[in-house]
Length: 635
Image (tube, rainbow, N blue to C red; front, top):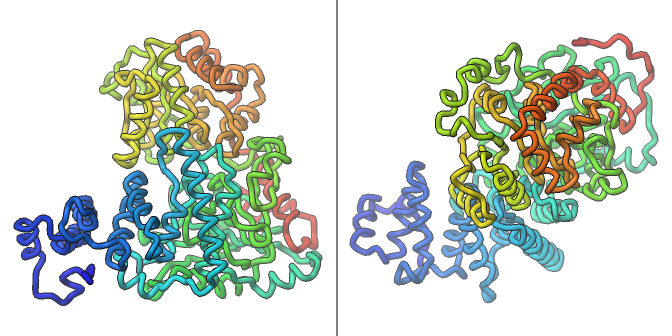
């Protein structure tokens, strides 16, 4: 049987240069394609060319003796090719490879490939039907995999074999085998709680060591959850995203920094996922706080459950509440959350979707009542017990993201660019048309959005769409194809790369109207747009992630403004956008109303009080003294 090994692995005297010459003479030789392919991948600069060669090595059309997919070498190649395409957000390229392996009846795919295939969702589906089929496929394959794991407990992942034979797997078998749930938050037609829970069920079966429960948690669960008394509630805030300038840090730090230190002992637990990540300095604001940085080491390789090394460290903290602000955003934090490391555990809207973890482990999802549907409906979207922050207060303590026309993110003066005018600042976009900007990344713009965009152009012959270009070539092509198929005038659509923050603010200022993405909407984007006095037209859907803009407008308490910017259906969304885009009078009125009320979104101490009340409510202890008037480190 042929083996998939590089020349270096073989200890072979045959150099890469020799294999390159062999490939040139014998392009249909599978082993030559493999050797040169892996050398290109390892070089880093020509990975795509390497993947093309590996793909040829398993294709009867391209080589004379392809590596069979029912053998270990064939599965190694399939795994390498599929994982690379998934990392590049090229799901359409990965799916045929995974389907080919899974369809082999006589030699079923190994557990890693089965998990990789079952947990895969489209990043940029080419239609609503494709999105629905992607969810149906996910539910079917995950259910079958769970049943098989339960029927055959001896079927376990051989991580040593995986790590030695499958390139890239050794760094973290969990990440290699399990796909991220990040894209699920944009599937607004799905039962997200069911889908997310399937992910948890598979991972917790493959890596059962993750399912740890501390002694303190066991005592709490068996005591009938009787609260004891304590001077302060000890909260651990565990996150892989409280890094410098990260959206999670920017969202939560205003509140975290202002929690009453006479009521709460705060321990920040930074789960460092990337070597160059820097923790946000806000965590050092109070000397009474504890800061812990947990980082992966070389000894953690070849083990998808390596995160269990953190269990005794966190258990020793003797926490009352372990709070994860952003599960799903970090694979490290998500795995850590599978364990019950504190009597009460909760997550929240750093990623606006359920974790999928049962409420016996992840007790609560803390959401904002103003940005959710009625409680009895909204609770069905979560595997955790849903807790609402009050509807009459903001959900975070926010401060403006610019000051005197200068971005506080990159220090650039956006007003200078605005004063230069459209032609100089964005020379590639015709200046005299009506500018409709939507700079959310295309993975937020699911197929439901296509019709809205095209109808805006149909209704306003002078309208131009300004959109964010996708991160991958495949996603961009799918997005362009969708818009073309929907009938958009592609000559009136302009795609921009990610912009420095001050240039982004300048674009918002120079645009006539900002379109909120649909079905998943903007949060930080909306606040930035409202802060500079521009209008965001929004269409709230059924999940939290689509309702931020609606909730912000509710907080501004201007019912007349709401009728001008918050749509009840798709046709009204188009009409409201075009009214503002085409009428200077309407636009001036809307922007004037926004400028009168946007201050209500900032420096709201009631948001801090709301979080304190929730933490006190869910805590397994009762604070001895209710006197919290003297706040330590009040800002």
